[in-house]
Length: 302
Image (cartoon, rainbow, N blue to C red; front, side, top):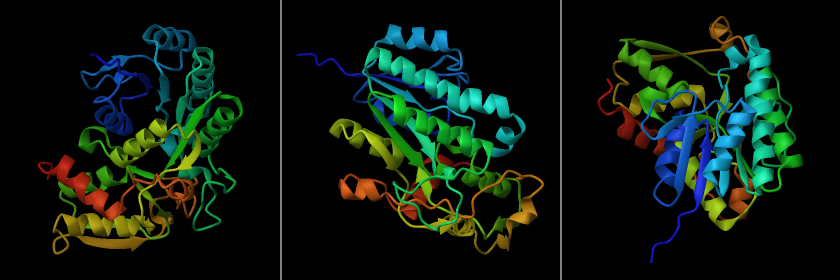
């Protein structure tokens, strides 16, 4: 007897997180994955900022769930393109909520550890955010709208994302790997930024665990082990066995102020308190994930 698979519409699926969601969910669910950047054969073109087109495409697919993944995540871009940021990161999320509510299906929204001001070193799921820049404000505004208006929702807060490899990773790990590939023998890494790495595959697996238990609501979802940028870079160089060849020099954030001028909290460390209490935390330690990530995605890179 053929079992009809449940259907998930994944909007903004072309990035590092979308790639992991496709891999994790495509086995057990029927997917429609869309993005403005069609960089894989399982993606179709859709700009979710166009409400009518977004609505029509989702309605035609008749999904059981709507996953809204896409956002501008480059903080400097968000500070210099403010209107574009709120249209993409906030208003499009409101549109997604309207669509999900009309179809009476749950919505998944991805939030960020960056919505805190860093006044504390560690934040649980119930700490009240205080966003600093336009990126953080736009994401928090989306979070608040989902919470107040979605009939059923899952909001998951990610930390420092890693995943997707050289093709899709626009974040810290790829930036370090690029420098090493370019022949850098010295890396200048900030020692005043604390956070929690988040491996895209663990994140997608944990979303799946919550979805299948129907535990709706808001969850912190980051890898285990609190750390900082300096420790991540050091661990990466050690995993690659390059500690004898590459020097890591600690600097404070002012060193990179020209390139990275947007406000960033001194600490974005999250703890998965609710996942722990529900005994559904499948996020592994960040060092284990980093090692797996480098092995699976960067074995032929350098």
